[in-house]
Length: 420
Image (tube, rainbow, N blue to C red; front, side, top):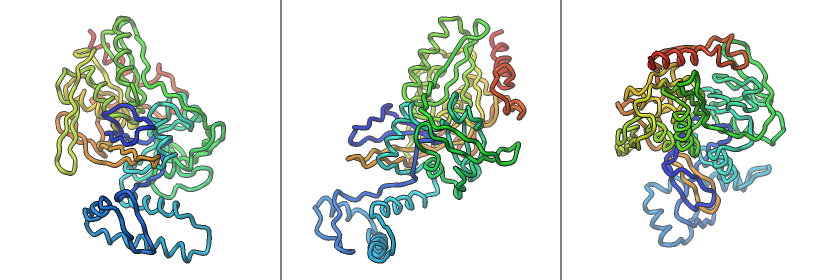
């Protein structure tokens, strides 16, 4: 998941930490790089550390075996002195930092330089330039979690579950989402061709024109007079507020029961997920809790809401990840609704976001696991629906038509039964 207990990520904040459930990264989170920062100033002459301030000296003293990092600077100095070719010191530093985070084998722990962090902020605010597809790692392969509704990716035919093999003819050689994203990114109006593997066919090339992506994360309507249908496409900024407003709007139109569609929702802010789930769960009840490496437990409790006791069906699929699974798990554990669809993605870890001062980017680092109210961690497992319904390939290959969507139709049948 990716999310923040303080909602807004502001570019001008000097330093901010916030819990995020991200999940699954969208096509605008880049570069698997982490920043290793000691004190405020480094002064080197070759490999000898010159005089430093008392604060820096204390910081160094607090780090065990700091001399282990001497080799890093020995290699750096040797490269600068000997390498016969162009070389840039900043690039060396970034690559060294990238190696640190990659060594963790955690696709959710990344450092973002200033440009990448800016893109992350834009994405979190719901507007950015790209193809409009969420990517994740599935079976050690870079996989499309879901295209954003109405995005260039969806219009070009990219589908959930597609495995990306090449970008503009260049092979994807490792399961690295951020590296793949950096290959996909580009200017508005410019094309990019993805070679993908799809379960039902041989590999195929899909050309997509990059554009401004505008996310409308909450949509809803009343069906058949008393059935509300609300779709949440991501848990970005203000989703919980918009969701609550949509519930009130549809109740005023006669809604008596609800279909909540979380299919293809890759996640987002933890606080937003908790507040969405709160609409159906009594105030004070645990929605989710996290446990970190020190066995510290932190609970997130319901704030109460507008739809407690309302008949509910939740639609999920393999693209429902992270924050979506927080909501689904809580509603399932409290018996608040029936889940229909296919097993969710399975991302049960939480990241902390650290913004570095002076425009030096940000770090997203896995800090804990999250659990459903009944104590289940769904990481790499997912949530199995109460009623499993798959969508046949012959329907997936066509332009979406809700009237022939078997998952939606099963949800409609189920909510009608609940309202009898």
